[in-house]
Image 1 (cartoon, rainbow, N blue to C red):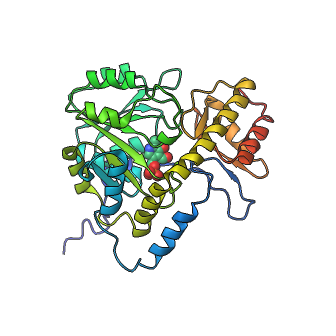
Image 2: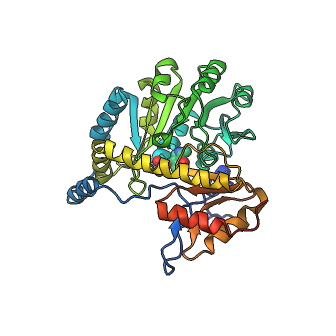
Image 3: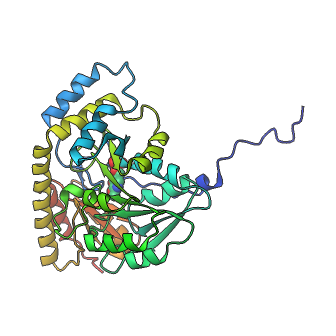
Length: 365
Ligand SMILES: Cc1ncc(COP(=O)(O)O)c(C=O)c1O
């Protein structure tokens, strides 16, 4: 019996050992007063009664596997976005859809490009796929530097992620910016426009995802039910694009990963779209109120088109997050060490609690 390696243990791929951690928004201690949770860009509203009713109906069937292809919700989304069901793929949150896109399109030796700072899952999912992240710094206005991104495309670039509005900084991409970027990128490069916060956008110049799909055969849209549709806890997201590009993504989807209750809740949410859009409009109104208060107090806040605002306080980030977290009840935000703090727009009283506590901070750089 050879025993020279008897104590050796299985080793993960080096890329996995080197992954940066995904930092979730703080949730607060179980034994503390319920916090003002502005740390995860969630909807402040409880699920709609019609969604709860759909979940109750679905609960009785969870001894059965869900529909593996999520056919009904896929068809419903396709109708909603005016495309064919073959042009839509659904998975367990848009973060899972993106993982599947990268599994399908990028691997060892390939590059995946995105702006930085942007959604923190991008570099993690790129590395898990085995590819190299290429991170192009945002401009001073916290916007994508699309000129620099176009210039950074190489023969190894397989996928470019564009985040509009950009999480965590807030600005959108305009149609003119997207058009000139698409014109300068080879059509063999897959461009994914992440529209997670679409329903909160009010910038009339914003790139129109569905209209752009008509123009660019190498474009895909990434969307979610987690934000304005209020289903973050159920995990449903989707991509829309040309059927030939979507089909390899569908092949990567973990079988049965979107539960039956999640599929039905997503359909019930699409049925209640008007109501959910009204909720999103309330968040937009609150965003305006918070921005106005911040700017009146001298804060330099980038254009905010999602359900969050960005305070780029640099080295004072940890101190600001700690100051807000020490309020009673705690105001939980999402700090990005050394860069800034992202604050989700919550219900009016939550936003007031944030503004009141912020006004007591004397560490502003
Ligand atoms: C830009 C962006 N894309 C995608 C996601 C993923 O959302 P989910 O996996 O809940 O659909 C998020 C979540 O915060 C996000 O900010």
